[in-house]
Image: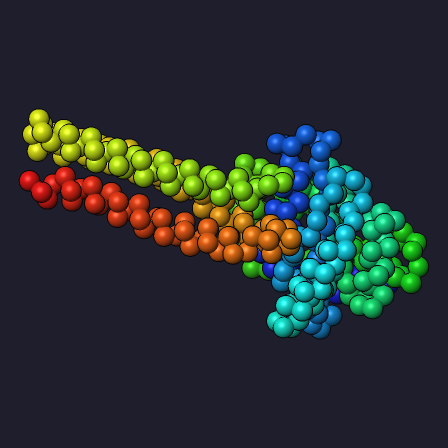
Length: 301
Ligand SMILES: [Zn+2]
């Protein structure tokens, strides 16, 4: 068989793969604790070309083979229904080989045979995050098909691929995303960590602003209007700078919530929506609170 059926990946599908895999295998985690991640590729086939529009991470395991439990299969069945309503179906699967080369093991061949027998264009994407991070111009993955899905011989070939609509900066952008993962999305329990970081930020910023208001109100009793104004300007700039720094990191964290595993996505769905709304609203609130200080201090004289 020849390498027919080239693959076109959407950018966001690629990002879902690399984020979910790097989360469990990056330099901030001990190498002995690195875990393989497995997920499903959704999309459609058209004119012999496989279009991957979504990648959904399912599970991670520290053992060599990634396995799914019964509950996962129920979730997957539900997801399948949702995708079908968008005319998308499973076009393949992905998994990571953290720190090891890209190939299909015997287990991988079995999984792939199950997909490729009914759908000859089905693909297996294997990603090694270390290749992406340490090599110069390497996206870190390969896509394979079995030469013959009716046997479980370990014979497979590489399929050419491209990532749709990417320019020169895409690889760099992807690596930046990975740095965000290493800082904010490593391992388990990330959802609670991100939520508590947000709560802390709201508290911290509110207390900075409230502190400034109290401070200026007291200062007003003895200082001149000019002194008050200078002090306000100085502290306002300081607080804004602090907020901008936090905003940058929280924007990344909120964005990374798009790439949680299926189970987490379903478990936290409402809370994730809430977090997004809350964060969006708080950016506005922050500006209003500062304006309110200005008003309180300068209008009532
Ligand atoms: Zn494998």
